[in-house]
Length: 441
Image (cartoon, rainbow, N blue to C red; front, side):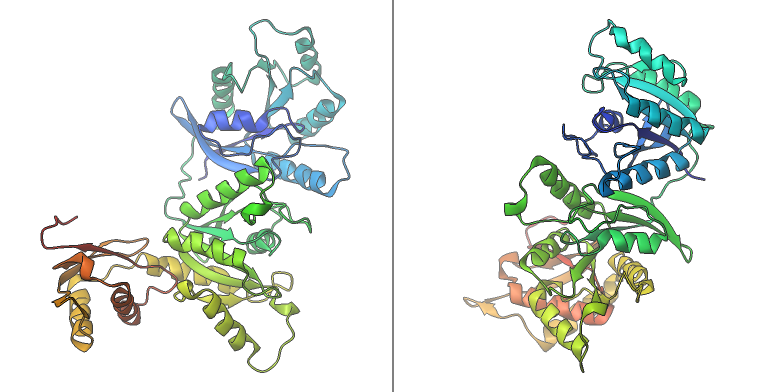
């Protein structure tokens, strides 16, 4: 059973994202004065009086707009309304009731869901004269709030909890594999998410950078549960020209941090660019599992060993991701898409692998016997024992005579031997060192 769902909807720039962020207690959605900033629906968990529910922030609705982005926003808001158990209809107390508000209200009434009209930007206890116009919508008593000043939010939350069917239902996703889809703008991230889901959950258009927020979407496949996180395309810093784009970069980095596996999407026509390397480095440094997904492979002219040559170049450019498996796909042609989730599941499994201490120390002893550590000014590294102290990513503690004697090249040699023996495909491996006088962790 899933959690109850509450959608926040309304026309652009009425304060939906500010309200959303105040409720969930952190800056999840982009907040700017530019209309149309929040363009995909965003999910977060909220709680009030012991009742938990999922809150959805949506892009502003322009019912009559023919613009491709606004049309996509309208479809996203409609999808959110379809899945919601209750709907918060956000209105602007400064602008007063508008024709667009009336059109949105008509859409909401057709859903036959519980709708809570909330008039935002009421910054004083005295209600403005135009406040009573909102009763004309026929949606019941409107609530006056100031999301920016956190005025009146408790009453809205009380109304939400009253409207929910039995409050929270058990919908925890703690055991699901978190997959962040990362890459430059316009490499096909949202298209891949939609193809895997089988529905238009994320807006897709030819406009680079369409996805500005990180979007969590649950998916179950062959008994395995996943959370797909479609992120904003990461651009070079020189191209981060405004606050909106900057928030998107921060959010994409945060999405990497809370994922288990990152799907690093590349454009086959462009190969590996400097920006691809920077994005890959973020996932590597965060210790996440990585699968390299080469999209638009159908657009490459094939010759003998075309894929092998591409893989060789790939490994040369992304040498620090030598452990990451790759998959060559075409989202447009739906080629090899089944391999993507399978690789992600496999990498998540390897990232959580625990190695028995006996096998681990036997392997390290053999490795040291075959290739003793080099000496440094007459002193040689001694490894007394090794233990695995963590997973996700695998973390190993080496008890040694002096941690300063562990050279990078020798640590890489030991890592390669561990990978040969135990796999860890797709996962980085972290080492800690403790000298004789250091306390164990």
